[in-house]
Structures are given as structure tokens and as C-alpha cells.
Length: 231
Image (cartoon, rainbow, N blue to C red; front, side, top):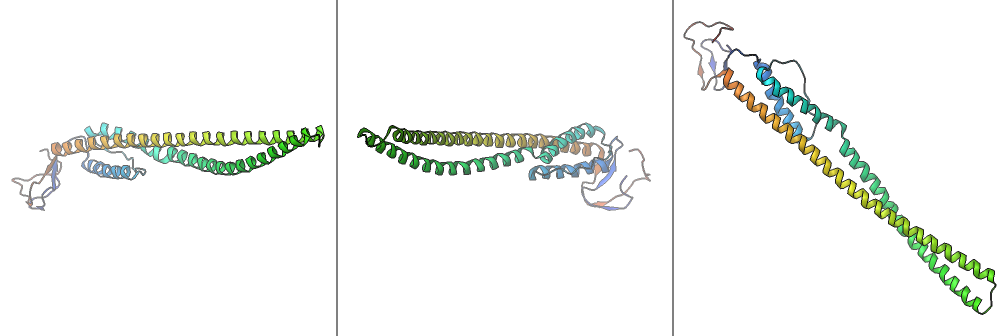
């Protein structure tokens, strides 16, 4: 019994608990932390749970299953693997994009140098055709032209390689973000489902074992009752 004879009570106040393996304070505590867990899931934060020994009777199995999933969720949030991985990819991506911009500027300079070497080589060819310069001079001009052409090709390859790497990083970023959303959603849905299930079981438990006053009023016993008396 939770009330005394002639005690004023409000509607919804518990009057008595029918004997069962569960403890009412423990069940009410679980009912409270379910709301905290749900709020933590909504906020994407760790669920603060005090895993004390409790007497939950028929609710124990569902509560234990929920605690396992809460541990999985907390480990996921605490490890923070996906957000850290995403941040790392973004950092590398930013560095590669900056390097690509610099490489494109260098490519422009190399192309201009190549054009100058090409014109110089063409002049040397013209002079050679008129026998105004030696074979050594034309060979030096050709060597410089070929070196500049190789530099241009190397720069093209470097820029193309960076562009491919950037595309791959962007794909990895999208994949990682998608994996994070899916993993988080799956954990959220699983936890919410277990919470709803346990809340439903608690409601049923209360209906079966807790006598509640339907109205405001005063308790009147027809005879003397004692604490822990069977009903």
C-alpha cells in the first residue's frame, strides 16, 4: 500500500502494488531513463546510463537487450570514427586541390617556356639551313627544346594525376558520408524501436500490477489494512 486511510489523493496517484518480481521504483527509474536515451539519440550524444542492479521482473529481458544496443550506440558516438575519417578526407582533398591550382599555374609557365624553346629551335634550324651555325649549336637547341617538351608532358601527367586523385577523394568522401548516415540511422531506428517496445511493456506492467486512483478524492478503507498485506 502507498496510501493511508482518509488520505487525500489526486487522479493518477498510485494506491497499491500487486505482488510481483519487479520493484516499482526500479520500473519508474527505467521509465525515466528511456526518455533520456531517446533525447540523447535525437541529439546524437552519448546516453548516460547508470547500470545499477534493478528488479524488473518480466521487463528484465527487454531492458537487457536495450542496454546492449545502448552500449553499441555509445561506442559508435565515442569512437567518432566516421566524422574523423570524413574530416581527414576533406583535409587531404583541400590540400590536393590547392596543389592542383599551383600545378596549373606551373603548367602555364612551363608551356610558355616550351613555346620559347620551340621558337628558338626553329630559328636555329633556319640558320642551320643557311649554314650560319654549327651542328653543335643546332644540337644544343634541339636538346633544350626536347627537354622543355618533356617538362610539359610531365606537368600534364602531374595535373592529370592530381585531378584523378581529387575525383577519387570526392568519391571516398561521398561514400564515407553515406556510410555514416546509414550506420547512424540504423542505430537510431534500432534504439527507438527497443525504447518503444519497453515503454509499451512498462505501460502493460503498470496496468497489471499498479492500482491507480482514477479521480481526485480521499482514501477510505472498509477495514484495517496493513503494510505488505496481500490484496
